Length: 67
Ligand SMILES: [Zn+2]
Image 1 (cartoon, rainbow, N blue to C red):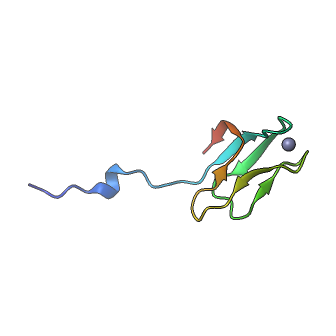
Image 2: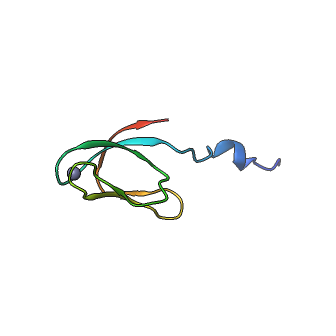
């Protein structure tokens, strides 16, 4: 039985830009999903994404993703 080439089956993680809505003021903002620094809302300053090693933790609501 031939060995399965998992690297072909599992898509490589690719970075995306996410359109995130701030929980506090509903401002829409584009956030890099692998952000290395805390991202704050441009309008009210509430944190909307935290770095977590790999992918950022998005605290707001993701409404769209751009590859
Ligand atoms: Zn805000």
